Each structure stands twice: as C-alpha cells, then as structure tokens.
Length: 147
Figure 1: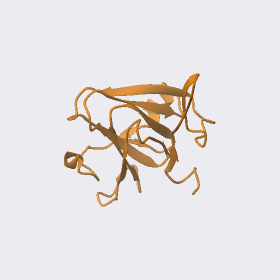
Figure 2: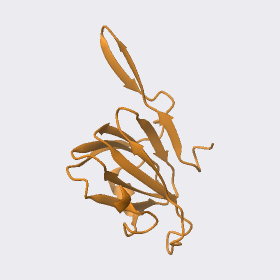
Figure 3: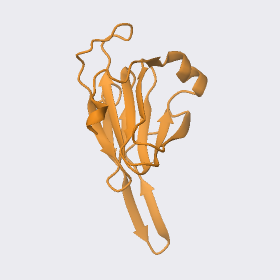
C-alpha cells in the first residue's frame, strides 16, 4: 500500500516495565508533519465533517474516549459525486491505531463517548491548511447517526 495514495492504518503499541509505560507507533512516519493539535468533543452529538484536503496529509490518534473517524477519496473537489463510498474506523486508546489520510481525501469525525480527545498531526501550518481546505456538508457519504 502506497502512503502517497492510500489511507494507512498502523498499530499504536504499548510497552511497560518497572520504569513506566511507552505508547508508540513506530511504523508511522512523521517525516512531513509541520504541526499537531488536539480536538476534544464534550458531546457525542457533534459531527466534524467533511474537511477535504486536495494537497494536505493528516494523521489521527485517539487520546481519550472513543472516536469514529471516516474518510472518502474525493473524485472532483469542485463537484464531488454524492455516490462516493466512505470508509471508517473506531479509534480508542485501548485498541488504538494511527490513521494516515493522504492528500485527495475528505475526513470527518464524531465522538462515540463524551469527553473524547483525538490528536491530529498536520502536514501544513495552519494558514496553508486553511487556504487549501474545502468543506462539504456532513450528510454527504456517511450516516453519522448510526453511531
């Protein structure tokens, strides 16, 4: 699977000994990451979707609670088909993954548990990201109400 064109899902693993614990995703590359930020959802009713990124890559790791993360490959950013098929994963610290969503996709997320927090790594600085981000209505491509 090419990291340039496909979503990559890597394990987040834990190591523990008498000194403490290490949580890591040694197979996830942060090579082009410019910044990181946390998103916290106090409510399970909030849907943060869809943010399309023609050029920027994003990575997601759940910190607390549980999130539903969905993504869809956009066929045309000016006029996307409404028949595109979104994929999704549930993320939590207990059975966590690091999800890398490459350029050319839109992503969205929703907390499944109250007070959930997710860590996002971004390839662009905030101004660059805002300039290339394209928003789409949350009801496109996925039924958020099922979760």
